[in-house]
Image (cartoon, rainbow, N blue to C red; front, side):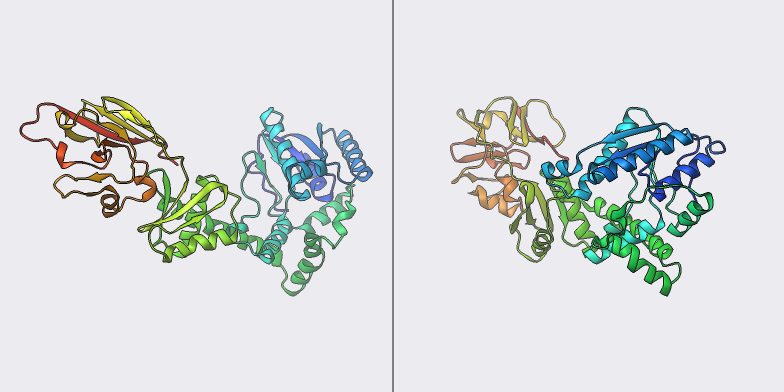
Length: 429
């Protein structure tokens, strides 16, 4: 058998032992090679509380087997059906989450260096077919993603090889009767679909599993390109609309994840985001988890709506908070600062955000509504509404972080200079 010992050599290995033929075979193989691989062996068993007395019988079998083979055993118990109901998870998902929580506990408590599971080549091939039939994307081909502390030494081993090994060594195992119930889709694939494929195309499982590995590698590469395309702009995660479709879709998923909507989205949400590429700037889509996507020029921006900061401060030197922005007024120059004539600001100026009726005379330009100025500068509304301003009534004397008014520009008569700086408090979004 093509057993991969590379992640196990010289380590303390804990086998996830259900009592079924696959995990019993794995434990026996590792026990037989423990000396040459310098492996210290133990096992863990997760009793899910799903099959009543049958589950308890499996536990008893595992306990007897480990005692007979001299393998230390740790047992975990849970009411998985109860957990599934409380967490609104499917039974299979709740069971998987319980098992991996047990794995993490063993690793975190120092009970082992690595957990070995008995997933094999046929498992991988069956999962590929199951996901393809349900409409997965290329990302779904990574059927057994790498997990820290988890090893799968049987991924190069077929079920037929495991069966032959079990028979050759006369190994006992606990047969889960539910594995034969073809009302479950995975069982039907295992018992009907895969045998038919193997009959027509011998070695089909191996080739399907190999395809999944290549597909996962391709997806990882595309995902890295998509990651590199993301830009942070004013607290939003921006995705260029010119990206090819395979990169655009991946970049949008990454943007959703960064904004906290990793699992809540639907295919309808993704279609709505894609439509933004052909709509005018300012078009938006409301997405799950409070995330908004807006077409902004040559990109789609993803962000969580922030409560508008209505704070107003008397104009003075200091540091002022405006939601996600920080405005600094001081006498020392810093990178990105706007420079203005300190004496040109009339008494009674305030620092605040935009209001209806505000007007602005940009440096070297004519007087215009602030809204039109921001539009002309292609500053998205979500940013423009939150930018700190220096205002005298409705007259805006500085859009901090963008431009000062002609009325406060530095001239040859300037005696005192002031520097206005803008920073964003969470640039990583």
